[in-house]
Amino acid sequence: MIGTSAVGGAFVRSARSLRAAARAIPCLRALGCLTAGRRVRLVRELEELRAVAAAAQDVVLRPLPARLAGIEPAGGHLSASRGAAVGGDLYEALATPYGVRVIIGDVRGHGLPAIGTVAAVLGSFREAAHEEPRLSEVLRRLDRALERHLRARADGECPLERHVEEEFVTVLLLEVGRDGEVTALNCGHPWPYRLREQPVGPALARQTAPGEVLPPLGLFPLPAELPTAHWGSLETGDTLVLHTDGAEDARDAQGTFFPLRRALSEAAGAGPLVPAAVVAGVRAALLRHTGGRLADDVALLALRYDHCPLSSPSALTRPAADAHRA
Image 1: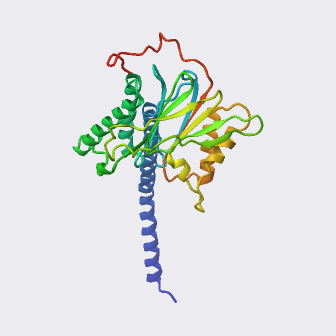
Image 2: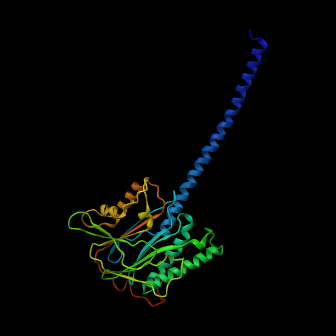
Image 3: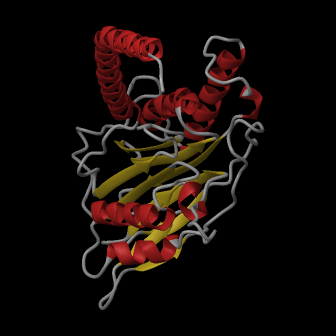
């Protein structure tokens, strides 16, 4: 038989445990409130960061206008960095006194470390595109701007990333003249695809390769003579689709590359080409193919030529060499 003293001792210990548990309940409740409050603050801070990232994207990669002097543009971007709105890809299209000038490029790496380089290159292009009569001089301006930016980074003025000497930027510059003639300079970037409407069935997609490709900016000095490529004139309805290599290099779980050419044709569909629909269709196809897990940033820029004349000469007068600012 169990003694009375043993039973009493067990009862006393149980009572003490219950009292200790009762005293701990308020503490646990307080801890739960603190944890919940901290979680709410973290969610709020994350939402604020996303809002800042969206604002930064609008500044660095500005929304394209609905029309640009006879060209209907549309652009889109996907970042490989989870939760990032801006990556290492860049694009811009501007109506200038010399035609519509376009840039697309890819900074080595992605995420926050690449944003400063993207901003430096785009800032230089937005000014030089209006000021320089020759596309080759626009490229030289970009090269000098990148050199200054990387030198400042190396000196510690912009310490976003350590290995500055390994950074480079691929760049494709296009100029579409009043008659639809296309001039291009390429520094290590994929050539664009040309979509052409067909009488029956989906649009025909073909990759262009009109000229020599220079090394990416930042690796070597530009040569004295730049190999400018001259295409023929675009026909009404022709659409150029510029992209970064993240599109063609994207793979699915089995390692199969993304079929960009086929995706472009399917996204274009039959009938008149709509640049925004092409970009949206390719983006959706990319996400399906990769399961939403991109290994690299992707930028897409579609330009449909509809043979509209440029704006009135008074709006786009050719400036003196140093009189115009973007």
